[in-house]
Image (cartoon, rainbow, N blue to C red; front, side):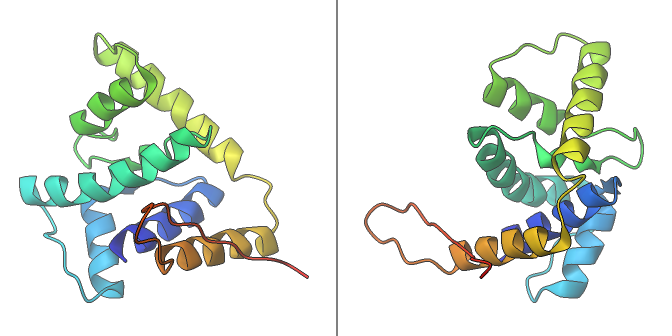
Length: 152
């Protein structure tokens, strides 16, 4: 459920061309969910990274950019080191230094904003409903959950 709430918020932020800090994300989730997140420190990073990795991996597998690039550190204004390590794994790339990381992140951020820029509200609503349906899907054998929403 937390993963769904995080993804839903990230979609909204992408449409608004905004980023969010890790602590702001935790605070938002804590207001919306019964499951509570730590609001700072390494514990926050550990918990959030699990959810963000699931979301980012799904997006990249579907040919979309890492929507988790919207989540940034208050201190640096960029994603954490864990984001870049996960990006290296997902894309099979080597981000050798801070400049490479900054350039990669800026490009990924542009792609995220572009991905969500012109979606009509009804399409975004359908997308969110499909995500919600997927989260409720029953797939005991394949563990491959699918959700769909149709506009008639």
